[in-house]
Image (cartoon, rainbow, N blue to C red; front, side, top):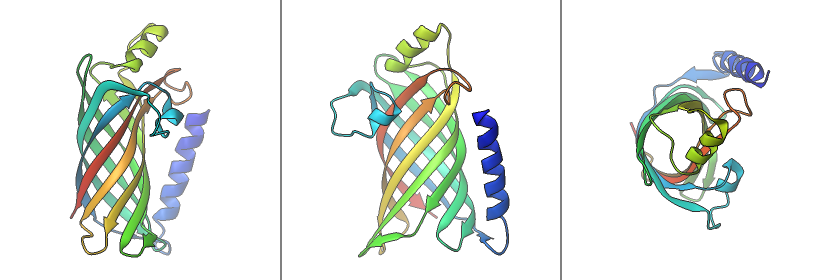
Length: 195
């Protein structure tokens, strides 16, 4: 049932944002690199950056974003795809893709602060760290899960094409709609180039 509600919300939002009165087409694109350690906690724990809950496992990835619509109020809707490696006690590859929404409306002096969120799907060749332990409790592999990437980016108005960001790189079963698991959470930092 939650998955059906999410699909309805996305469909409704897409119709509203595609209205000529509210949104206009854009073709902003960017590429980015990011990396950081996995945490041993759950999704909500990953936001506690000061806690000593980091694994010796590491995520590194590259990605691409393409924004299709821009609302006059600063909201942008686009798509994201990325490829990463998960290294540490074992190694694996990850591919993720999803829709991304950004709010380009906050500025303090010459610094722009841009929150965004990416929601979609993730597939891995193998689990790593605490995700391996959680999958073992389920008794089966979990290569395909939901992806969620909440993010805060900062940039300088003098260099609008460059952006630094922090993100939680999260895989999970979506409250049991795919599997009863909070898969993996990495706290990553990255750099983005817009064109």
